[in-house]
Amino acid sequence: MRITIVGSGIAGLTTAISLHEAGFGDVTVIEADTRIRPVGLGLNILPNAVRELAELGLLDALREGSVLTRELAMYNPHGDLVWREDRGLAAGYRWPQISISRSRLVLVLAAEVRRRLGDGAISTGSRLVGLRDGHGGTCGVFADRHGSLRTVGTDVLVCADGIRSAARAALYPSEGPPPTNGMTLYRGTAWGDRFLTGRSMAVLGDDRRRLVLYPIDTEGATGRSLTNWVAAFPGGEAGAPELPSEGVAEQRRAILRQFAGWAPPGVNLSRLLGGTRHIQRYPMIDRDPLPRWTFGNVTLVGDAAHAMYPAGSNGATQAVIDARVLAWNLATHTEVGDGLQAYEDERRPQMTELQKSNRSMGPEKVLTVAHERAPHGFDEVGDVFSEEELAEISRTYAMTGKFDQDWVNSRPSLSVG
Image 1 (cartoon, helix red, strand yellow):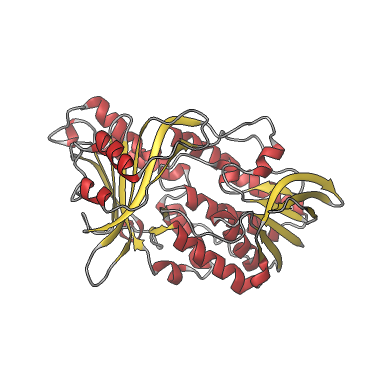
Image 2 (tube, one colour):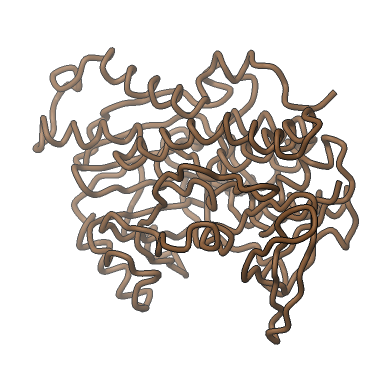
């Protein structure tokens, strides 16, 4: 079986590795850029996805240059602790939660694709521009940087080309650009002192704004951490693919106007921003849930299928799970169509619910409720919430995303054979 994957991001590369692990040897990844660019800042991989990467033999490589997350702690803007919970190994999972730079993750995945499938398994410089019917199913039409077209026939076309997927646009031509919720995201990384446990994710928020901080690397000699930070507040233009450029100094001022009075635990926000050399700025966008991912021998994975707001650490996590479930079903079904449909039947309902949950900011909605109930802060969180109410919000979200501890630790493996 010949399988072609569109896109060399986390979803596409993990799909290639998973397919090889499941017994498929003729797998090609086609990337639009002229080379794989390991860009991006920090992300979290939850234990359910770390389990899959461990079963692919990648855990040791991912431990290097990353941080095993110890806890999640959520605060109001005054620094009052709203909710804290253990994460990863500390929470009883058999696999850790990993905070890592996207560039590091992509480099590890790309190296593994080439090791397993050969250097020619990743083809660059060809952009998907359309789909057309061909012998045996749908073919991909690709354009190189000079505009020359070529048609790629394949038994399976897996489209992992992101939130602005050309394949999705071809399948749903009237959908339009990704919608935004009117929020602007600023993101960056900077070296600085450790805070809290040194392996903590801290989230601060009120009814509209969010400030997220967590380490993605450490310096053993100095004890310093590379802190990934995200600031989100109203200001995104609806439907805008990108925002007008700003200088770094202007970006810092915009962030401090929103968050200067906030109290991140153990973090000097002004100093952190001052140590950030490059800041990314863009509107917060997602995609509406789809009624269908699979058309004949074509299917969608990752953000192309279910892009969601960045809450709950589920973007990269669910892309990894997509890849493993897809490979498992293709390997355990005789007919390609049956395998692709089984993959969609398992994943699409779960991701639809998760997308909806993330539109209310997932587990972070406790911060919105805390602000509504106690906008000026509190002395005891028990005056605002019962412990059972907070725990239930976290537990419900984990079960929606299928990363609750009991399920992750006990479910059958997705490794074929």
